[in-house]
Amino acid sequence: MREKRLGKLAAAIRCIGRKSGATLKELAEALDTGERQARRMLETLQDLQFPLYDELPAGEREKRWRFDETFLHKLPNNWLFPAELTLEECIALYAVRNTSSLANLVDWKEQVDGALEKVGGTLPSGFSAMLGRMQDVMKALDKCSKDYCGKEDLLDALIKAMLRRVTCHIAYTSFSKKRDVQFHINPLYLFEHCGGLYCLVQSTKYLDIRCIAVERIQSLTMEEAHFDPPRDFDPEALLGSAFGVVWAEPFFLRVKVAATLAPYIKERTWSPSQCITELESGDIVLEMQTSGRQEVKRWVLGMGAAAEVLEPDWLRDSLREDAAMLMQLYTKSSATGVAERAGGETPPEE
Image 1: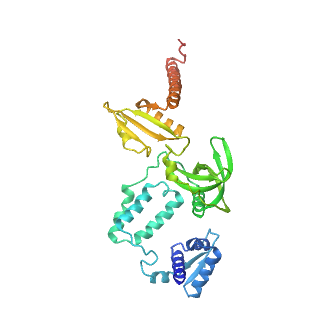
Image 2 (image 1 turned 90 degrees about the horizontal axis):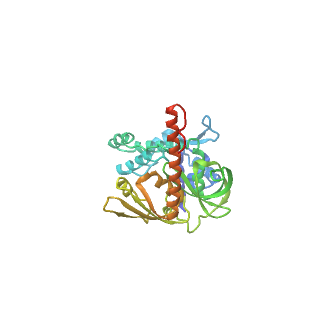
Image 3 (image 1 turned 120 degrees about the horizontal axis):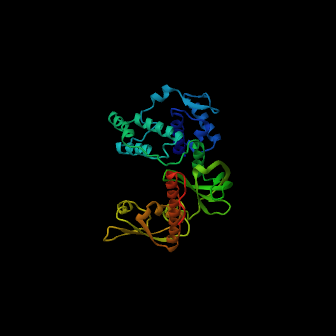
């Protein structure tokens, strides 16, 4: 019991000893307790004669508790941040910072930069100069990524709800229903895919697992109810069975890919069950069990004439229909272009 109390005391000192200090709410989170217990910890620190004071920073509504600077300077250099990081560990942190679109969100970027600045202050002089060049040699390409500007508070609330396992009420823009809908969810798992953030949630009404796009969440309110994740919930297995982020009835896919694109297909893992057969011509046949009909269809269409679906038949039929519509579209647009160049007359139909 005594060791536990000392651990709580040390955690409180580290929390308040941060450059930003700590609000009562932040202290409670650091101690994994309620605000009443956090207030008692503040009283304990004052009783122990710690040089503690509070202030209300401009523009903020909550007081922040801080230690006198002279007290912090007297602490051993590695006491507030006792873990000594290796160069490899620091490089890994900076690599995540520079290549993850999550870490580049406006509010999170400031938090990550602040943390790395603190880490940098504890490193040997040679490390700091080397890590300072990370920004010049490694960067995430955010082309075609989704815009989460203004969603920082919502993302923060969503992650806290997942960690605390709290049910949420959300307003969500449904593309399929072409309107905003409202429902209750148990948020389970946040992940990034192709520049977008998605969340696996459980519907409290139907108890099924769904995938929602974070940018379409218009509002999120944490409720008082808590939940336990489904016992059989395995996000990696669930997402591994889908081609992208949508899973449904699985199907067997066989695609023949021309030699010109074969190297690009072979260097990626498209499914845990995939099998690639190389043909004498240099073409390859990719086989896999997958799901998400529209995502697979868009992927095949993206390869144009370099890809031919061999199975299933319904996908071949669907692609044939799309090809006919594309032919009609471009034949019409081509004829219109000829007419415009000829003076505006449309050629007669044969």
